Amino acid sequence: MTYTTYADVFRPDLSKNSRFARFARVYDFVLIIGASVFIALCAQIAIPLPYSPVPITGQTLAVLLTGILLGSKRGGAAVIAYCAEGAAGLPVFAGGGFGIQHFIGPTGGYLAGFILAAYACGYLAERGWDRTFALTLLTMITGKVIIYACGLLWLAKWVGFNQVLIMGLYPFVPGMLIKIALAAMILPLGWKFLGSK
Image (cartoon, rainbow, N blue to C red; front, side, top):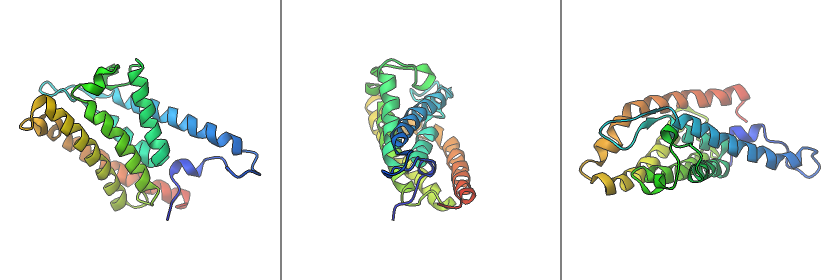
């Protein structure tokens, strides 16, 4: 069974006899670009760590929320747009970074993981996994696991497997737990407010 996402609730009617059908694609485009800007803004909340090439940012939470709120295709497209903006030279990465070097440098695996995580979280949201605290928590954890699996495997190439957890995972766990718990409480409340459509 497929559920609506938050973005679907407000999407113009696509049926041919609807006068709003032509605006549906514009709506999707605006959502995708808007979400990419949201991720970019959250990436600017960055705390560099002196012992790690990976900063603490608000970026990962923004990626997961993008997937859940927009759904798999729009969420994945928004993260691809975000990555394309950074590759094109816009200062959208953590701390105002930009350029291809971010994809081939130590944090490149996280960027790849962002796309997969947004798609996965969106897919789960489309199956109703954002309607209860427990399922939303599992959705967020799934997204985080994808991001860290991709990020840590790539980071290990730079820092070695003996240091990868210290530099790329452990410092982020406390903040990660707080952020996903808050999101898991808030998102189901939104559906209750909307009447769980």
